[in-house]
Amino acid sequence: MSGAALIEVPLIEVRRPGLQTTVQDAGRQVRALGVPAGGAADPVARRLGNALVGNGPGAAGLEVTLGGPTLLFHGAALVSLCGAPFGAELDGAPFPPWRAVAVRAGQTLRVGGTPVGARAFLAVRGGLEVPEVFGSRSTDLRGGFGGLEGRALRAGDRLTCGAAAPVTARRAFVAPDLHTPLGPEQVLRVTATPDLTGPLEGALLGRAFTVSAQADRMGVRLEGPVAAPHDPGRVSVPNVPGMVQLPPDGRPILLLPDAGTHGGYPTPLVVIRADLPRLGQLRPGDRVTVRPVTRPEARAALHAQERALRQAEGSLRAWFAPAGLPATAGPCAAPYAGRHAD
Image (cartoon, rainbow, N blue to C red; front, side, top):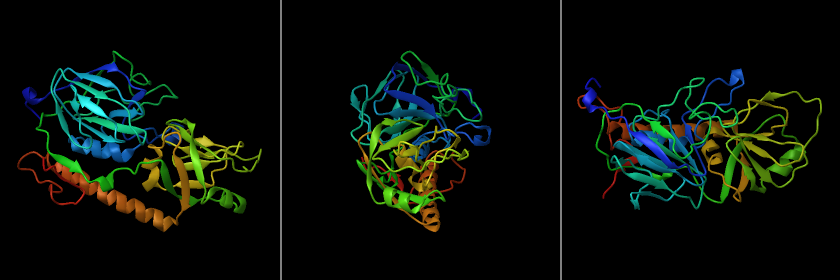
């Protein structure tokens, strides 16, 4: 936009940080340098939250975990909260999830807790402006870099957003079919690796594990011991989010975005990409069962998910297309996004 008078840059003051609130975006692509991917643990919430406010899919926002922050907006903003159903209020009035909401200067957004799931993504039009590290604004808590000084938010922090033309909040919604499935019972689809031996197959597949209290952005440890193979001579191999590690204590670990890039434990299973957002929503006490699928089935699931997400993103962003420019998809072009009746 050339008219500086049309640009607003909201300033957000953190009054209460919440349990663990961090700046996250789409993550990093430098694993070859030994740097974890990072990024929002529920990428579906990140993508759709950004689309609702007219941002690109990789714009930085706030990842809220279990207990949310209280934020004072010193400037007008357009905000969305997507993911687990956190209770939220804007100046005491209910703040609806999964839609774009206009926030006036001086208003306070309070995000509480969630009865199911673990995380939500708070997107602000323009995206949060923090320095990029290795091509991403995401916070790496273990490494202590990225985001806001490499740490979770603290009371008194101030955040700014990128410049964006103000727009009227649209009555757009995202079809619930696209939301990341939540709940205390989760079935994760997995593919096998050469580490999956006959005994491990019987021990891992078709049984329910309980998510332990050891759950963070690096990994989720499962309760329920498995007889883990022990090989002192095993070499370290690359890790990726979604791998199921089997350490010597026999308690499987599901790797999340902040997991290290290499490890020496056996990894007999890998959660398929289409189900990675579910990992970010697991909370202690949830029950997890893994179900094997073939690689063609995994690819088909990812293609179906990606097609639906892109249709929804295209439809939502069409609301923000400048007049006279063709939109990639109209508001009624897909069944995954539309207009609220209220």
